[in-house]
Length: 266
Image (cartoon, rainbow, N blue to C red):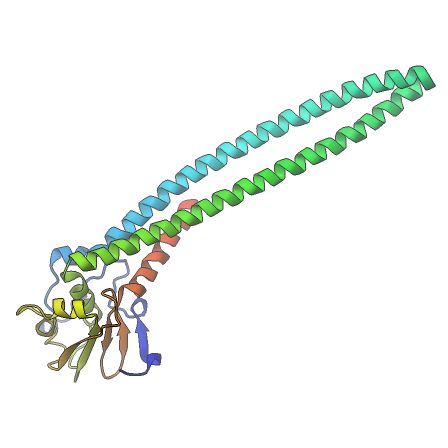
């Protein structure tokens, strides 16, 4: 196998469409690759993205509703606390002022008592405001962690869907390989490195991957690697190595989910 610095991630080669689907990009009719079955062309990437997006959108709607309710409740409690503190402080100041006035002069005692009460009341209000602010920050932090956790969960579900599709749909990896190699023609040789199980699927029947890529090269070999996962796939030509496995595609899907979530929040 050639040096790894020649590896091109799947997200970098232009055989992928601008969306998430792994589709055929048909070139001139004389060199077109055999069409992928409709079920494969729709592909799991679109399904996984939609499922993940639904989870994120629903979770964000719930989080936004909870956040608004929490902020409304905090504002209500703050207003009530401020009014209650003012009323209590004023009453306490009056009482203390009256009591002090009888012992050291009604006027000066009343003013001193009112000032002391106002100072204590301000301190209590400052402490209450600080506490409310702390609670608000904690709630915002919890909501942000909740939203982040939901996005991670959605992406993991999408990853599971991708892997499940590879196991249940024999055309899935074949469609990915054909899409990745679609723009290549007249290659002196092509090597396809996959897991043992995937190699068996790709070589099965007359309509195997070697026959389907005959327009690209007449020297194609599928090389099983026991250390590779069923979701892995490396395509090697004399000039390049393309990482066409699920990993790079998943990263592309994950970025799309995160962008979708960010746009929903705006």
